[in-house]
Image 1 (cartoon, one colour):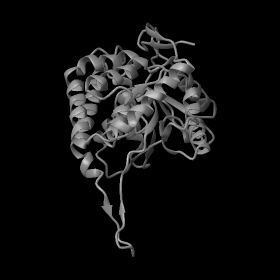
Image 2 (cartoon, helix red, strand yellow; image 1 turned 120 degrees about the horizontal axis):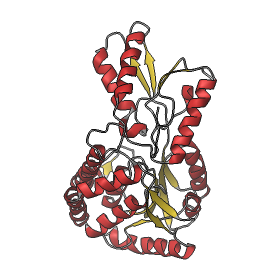
Image 3 (cartoon, one colour; image 1 turned 90 degrees about the vertical axis):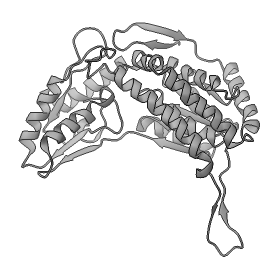
Image 4 (cartoon, one colour; image 1 turned 135 degrees about the horizontal axis):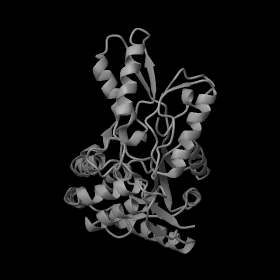
Length: 363
């Protein structure tokens, strides 16, 4: 099955890619394993030179890269520009500080000399999500390359062009062939890669379900794994708060990245003294948000990244309402083309409903 890049704003097919064959995957692994012994021996200064060049390329091509993110997953162009700038900052930060951060540390013990030494591990497999298609990758790869590791990226299937763009940037920056490669493969293939002895460690950012399966696959090979999974973050408002500011911050947090951010406010817990006023103001602000083309500077809320995401969100909303919740705003998919969903506010959330404990993609 092809890996398709589809514009979530209008449903247009932007590009299509054939997944790598088993032979092609093996070749990628061979290149990564071959590149590691040489790359790990480069000095911090040599690696920093390449990382700083990557930062320069990100800044020079900020508009083009940002537009690619907006076209593939629907975030507003303004937020995409900010994301690219943040990636450039991360490259500069690790280029400047990695040598100091990775210096051996003395440890007080009864031995004559004890210390912790940081050594590169080898080939690191990363499975990354679509919501921040560049930042999620660069915050993984910048410190890892500076530490002397090499990386393989299995990105979300709806952002293949962003995934390939990262590889292009790092190659242009001077990183040797095989040091960072994008794998255009299906999710089950990524799990099977963990059984390969050439993979030293892995990381995944995604859902709890994905984390369970990925973690179990890593455990079979006794491989180190870092998992960043979902959550349902509380936004608590007390009577001492500046209510106007709290409402503004709450709306901004909930709708960050079109409501698709793991660190956004998701559950609003209000003191009874200010609850009614907060809800009224909050609902009014949510209803006033400008939804539309994320390329338009006036747009505050773009589409969800995929049709599946919108379908899943709506199913969760309907289930929560059927359990007894009340909808004060939205609660329906947007009209017309694109993966739009109305800004939605639910109250009176029953304890047995999805909204009480689970993370919604947008709400």
